[in-house]
Length: 506
Image 1 (cartoon, one colour):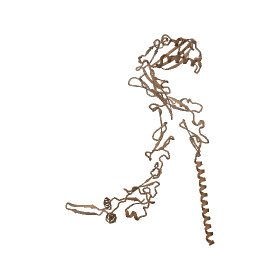
Image 2 (tube, one colour):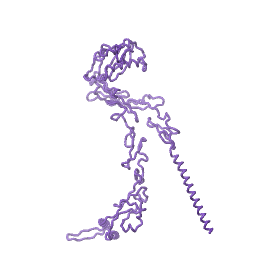
Image 3 (cartoon, helix red, strand yellow):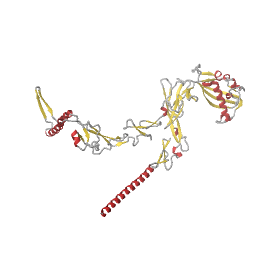
Image 4 (tube, helix red, strand yellow):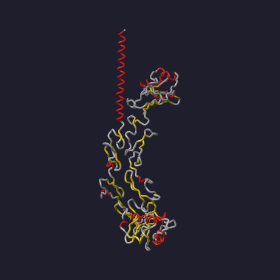
């Protein structure tokens, strides 16, 4: 690149600054006197003198002493530029990369105040790399796990990896663990436990000491767990009552559930059925309940007679009177029920405020120093036991890789271990999701990738690539251009031949 100093006379006399050859941005021309222009000659003269007496100092004597001033080309140039403001223009619309003679493949920006130039990329979404070549920061994509790269409109030299919710990190390099969210979308409200199962998968349930209230989708703390034995003296036991899905069992469970819901209302959280025993039909189940607002949640022993005796049931529940308006809670299909008249229901609250380490759960222990202990959950093995300062014993547990101890998956399924559990997943390519001759490759056991032939696109390789149409169109266009050029040549030759014949005839 060449940058020259310009004056009005030079500009008017030179053809280098014709409109078609220059890229002048913000250039201004100063009108200078001949005296000012002579400063340029002074610079040249000083430069010539410097070649013969470079660094030669001159003495100037004053009344107070002698000082030495070094006269250099730079000092004269400095003084001359203070006298008038030099202005630069780009001689030609050409830039070269710094330190080379390679032409810039970008637009050229001239800074007339500093007599410098800068190569700029014509595409606003491209930036020059270390070699000065314009590149798209998203090509090739720096984003991982096949997440899209998006150019940053605010800062064109930067990019953004647009991660889907399953991935985290600047480059989408981390798998997002939904269990670390404050409230995972598929988890109930309140005190829940979450187990991460891999990319995009997790399981949720209520924490120990809580149960799910399906009406509110909230994990509710169990303040009472009452064991109930309900005897139907007029109904004989059958094995069918213990067979899942049997109509007799379904009818019995619905009758009991409706009656308990009608009796306790919002205090009843859930019912867990154990089994039916023989003789007269005997139903064994437990009820998780909230304490009434005026109840004592710390009471440990409840009298069966006062809590779940026959006298608490509305009359129509036990007698199935014909004038009952709420027949849905009637036991008419099972006979007259009654409860045992003795016994107690114990509620153990010793684990209520106990926090146990990961992989363990609180278990009440009788005749111990602290009455509780943190023991390994199912799916964990004991490594060692430590004693806290409070005297409580805590087990240190390690997850059991059930996929290696006793492979539980069948039919070619893949076993994936998770904390305290496992999951059996099939190969996603077994269902042949890719079309044509595409090759299916499993990704992270949950997803697949179709490796398409070059003429196909789409995730399942089912859409032909439009490049075929582009190629065919290009060939046809090329043939059309050749035909037009050929006709033009023939027409020109024919016209010249006619002119020659006409001239010879004269």
